[in-house]
Structures are given as structure tokens and as C-alpha cells.
Amino acid sequence: MHNIKDQLDVIKISGVDAETFIQGQITNDITLLSGEEKSIYAGYCSPKGRLLAFFFITKIDNNYFLFCPPCISETISKRLTMYVLRAKVEIICAPEDVDYFLADESDVKKLTDNLSSIPQSKMQSTVNHNKSVSVTMLDSPKSYFFIFGNKKEISKLHDEIYSTEINPCNWNEVHIDNIIPNIFNETQDLYIPQSVNLDLIGAVNFKKGCYTGQEVVARTHYLGKPKRRMYLGSVTADNNLELGSDIKVGEEKIGSLVNYYKQKNDIFKVLVELRIEKLDARPTLNGNEILSLEMQN
Image 1 (spheres, rainbow, N blue to C red):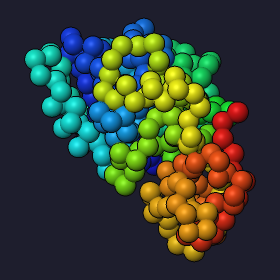
Image 2: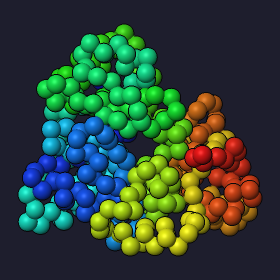
Image 3: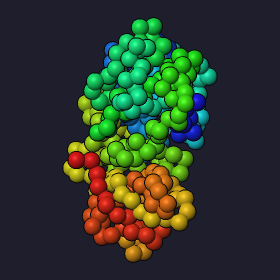
């Protein structure tokens, strides 16, 4: 039905201790979702402060939904379950009764009669009257909306917009264009949150309590500027790229490929993590120079 199922899976976390449990796991502050009026991005780190997952998190009716790529969702669910201990928490990977899709501003306006209200600001969420559908305005210059909830209702809403056409909105492309990372099998345990700009997109909260990997993340923050950052660029390649591939200057490895999509012909949009000092040294991927490197303003 939607075209991002191969890009996103969902982990449902519920139970009376769900909020406290999640708070001890992620880089952001889960209490921001308490009123169901906001969604967040957050990292999930190893004890060494390296990212094992990057989540988009929303909440409906005391259930938390953590979105991440399908290639890691099962292992991340199992890892989270290991830390539940005596807490009253239930974790379900890929529940069958929910679904989701992405829509742009012009398309979401076609649904105004079916939804209680449409979010008006970045990462704001609204939930319909019977708490079966949530809508979040994503953090991007052009307004994109993430529509999620009960599978039957989501199917109806999707068909109302796209019954005779293909949904043009693609989660991966929207996030790459807006310099928002993701973490996949190939890139787990490679990056600290700051090196892929999680602090710049509000996905790290430095005032919340303890969470796994916090010491490393906080130390980097309070010691001053990070030595590595993530940039958007473009590169010519004659075949599909490989996540985690080395970025080089000459023969020296200076970073790696975080994410990519094929833009046209042999041109790929790429997110790359680099040593900042090498930004102007004409970094290459597979021998081809990465052009037009930029990061968040």
C-alpha cells in the first residue's frame, strides 16, 4: 500500500513503565511526548556511546512507536527486551494492526475532513478523536506529514489520496535531503550521535537523566566542538553504493557513507560522515569526488 515499508519497521512499546523504560535507553527526552502533541527523533547507543539505531518516535494512547529500518528492527527489539528486567513493559516488533505512509502538504489537505486537525509546526503531532490515527509534520523545509495508526483506517486515508496514482513521497529521500541520518546493519556501532548531527536536529537532550552511552555523548558535548560531522553531497557512481563504504582523501580514510539514494542516471545523493578538517580536501567515494557538500544551517 505504501512505499516506505521496506524502509521502516516499527517497534511498539507499552505498559505502565514504558515511559521510564524508554527514557533510560534513548538520547532524547521521551517525556516530550507525554501530551501526544509531539514526536521526536532519538538515538539508541551502545555503552560506548556508538549508535545502534536511530528512531522516529511517536505516541498514541499510551503506546510508544519507534520506527527504524527493518534490517535492524528485530535485533533492536531483542536487545531492548534484555533490559526490561522487572519493569511492566511489553515490546512488540512489527505489530500487524498498524500501518503508515508519507504525504506532502498538498495531499494531506485532502484529508482534512477525516482528521481532527493537521499539525502546523515541525515535529508537532495530532491524534484523531478516537486515537486511531496520528499525523506528524516532519522536520524539513518542505512540509511532509507522517500518517500512522490503525491499519484499516490508514488504508482508507491512503486510498483517498492515492487511489489512482503512486505516492511520490519517500521516507529515505526526504530525510537524506534534509540531512537527517538513519542507522542500518552496515553502520551500527560506527558513529557517536554528534558525528551524524543528532545534536543539531534536536535528537539529543543534554538535560535528561541517565541513558545507555550517555557519558561518552555528554563528554563530547562538554569538551567542545566534535571533530566529525555529517554532510549532504552528490556523487557519480556506475552501480549501487554500499553503506559504510570508506570516504577517502587520497589513500587516507576520513569517513564513511551513512545513507544514499539514486537521484537520476548515475548521480547519487549521499549522506557522509567526515572529519571536519578534511571537508575542503576533495573527499572521494569509490574514487569519485563528492560534490556540493553541505550540512545543517
